[in-house]
Amino acid sequence: AYIILALLFVPLLGFNQKIGAGGSLLYNLQSESMGIGARVSFYPNNRVSFVPQFSYYSLFIGPISEWTAGLSIELKVIRRKHVNYYLLAHGGYNNWSNPEISTITDPTPINLEVGVGISGTRCLRPFLEYRYNVPFQETHFQLGFLYIFDCKNNTGGYRNQDRMKNGVKCFKPF
Image 1 (spheres, rainbow, N blue to C red):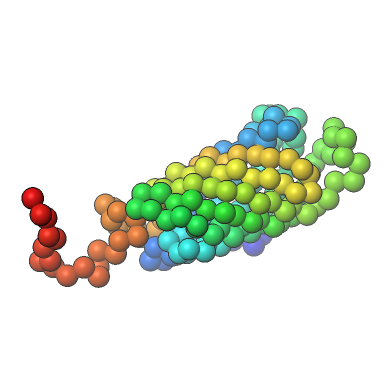
Image 2 (image 1 turned 45 degrees about the horizontal axis):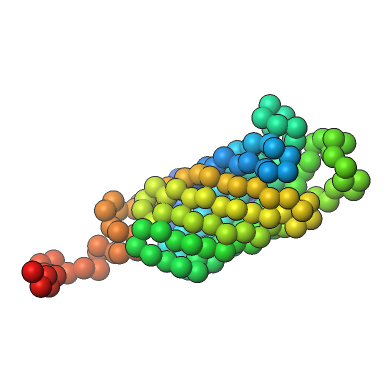
């Protein structure tokens, strides 16, 4: 857990578009619980991103009280100018505070998830993910934002303005 918390502060060091940080709201369909999440994304503009995450479900917003810390790997399978579609795999540690409310007799602390997601490509990137938790056989959604540090606005996603030559004219047939 301390490693995840430390990684949340890494973006403050100011990397050049190689790191982002954000938060999300979570909804578990089976338990009808809501939670919050925090994440750091390493290499968010690459085809493969590494995303340490922390999530917390509270008794105040549903019957479940638990927290999870782990690492997701995102594989962007379709990359467009304004949107990315990706597959994800997540592994981590799950600490369930009140397992006695469930019919699961021996809850595992291992958290393994697979899923799909869609995200924007600008500096402030909304995202939506659908995840399936293999050990608990349950699904949840994550809706949130990821901010890319040292990002240049109006770059159209992956376009690098620093590599473009000054004075280049684009051909327009009409």
